[in-house]
Image (cartoon, rainbow, N blue to C red; front, side, top):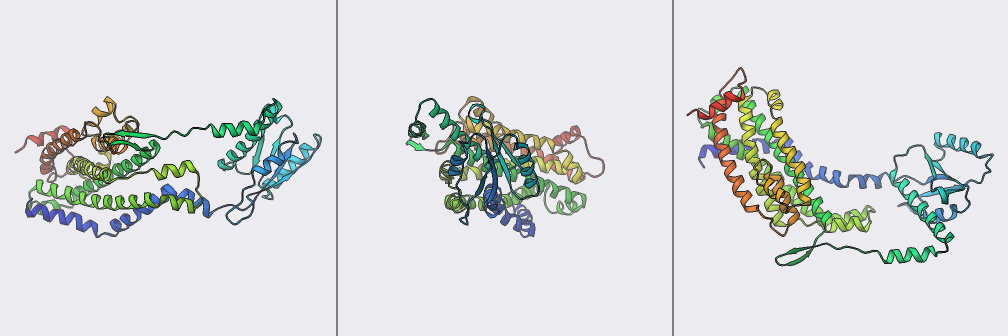
Length: 434
């Protein structure tokens, strides 16, 4: 690598790495991920509501006591989560009572009321009236409790012992533990955990390739529009300038990727105790967190495919920046790249579930899709290396080199062209220039 290319790399990397935007963005990146994936639970705890008051009109006369017993949870401060008040009323006075309760709900004197009809066992429907119905978790909790009570009553009415049946059902519940068969034996692995981890890692790759590709394009446009390029190419060949820009900006992305990798390793290691401290103790949820395995080989392949994907797409972004004359034009004409990014991401969802199918194999060999699709196959198959992995690396590497050779010719001519934006056909003619 010539000293001129190294000088361009240092200029592109150091000048941007020292900016407040990059430093703050790098520091905030893990924080943003924490807020995205755990913020809902943290905020839910911080804004834990006080004791909620509900009036219950139990016309059946057989639901209230059991409902209150089951819904006897307490808040973090030890106070009861709910205050249930029983309303006994005749059919003639029901409408008057309902109007009174509605008025209290509107005036925020109570949180709501439940109307349990006399024939609830037959019709299996209860009216849940509140000021705001957005608390779906509470509604689901009430529904589960009422369903349990009504089911027990129906079983008892048929001569079955409800508690014994439920006990047998609970003891008969089968837990399926998934094992992945490898050359070295079987490895216990969760499908949901693997899919979730693959989704997160692929999304980060998608985001960083797109963002830093656009940064490269804007850099080329800025230097071209301000006539800085003319001065630079007097000392550096256009192809050296382009390669230096690509490697320098790629270094920024790689820096953030390494920081993200370290954050992910720590987050996965400490995730379970953190969620437990915030009251998230659901066994199924903690089991998914516990089985998130972010291994060194997976991270290594992530870095490799990020580099290949970034260099491939950044060549296209550099050529586009050289063709257009303003940032607005660049934003308008980058839609083919955006479509490829989005297609790769959408294909990833299906491929991550079926990584060994013939279609997954062939799609992962297409250079436009390889970085995200092939990496998704690797991430969900770890510790197995899926078929076509090394072939995809070879194809992607060759495609990247060929692409850079082609777009460098467009870049060489385009950065010194001003005024009217050339057509695609004219830009392609530049490839044949010597």
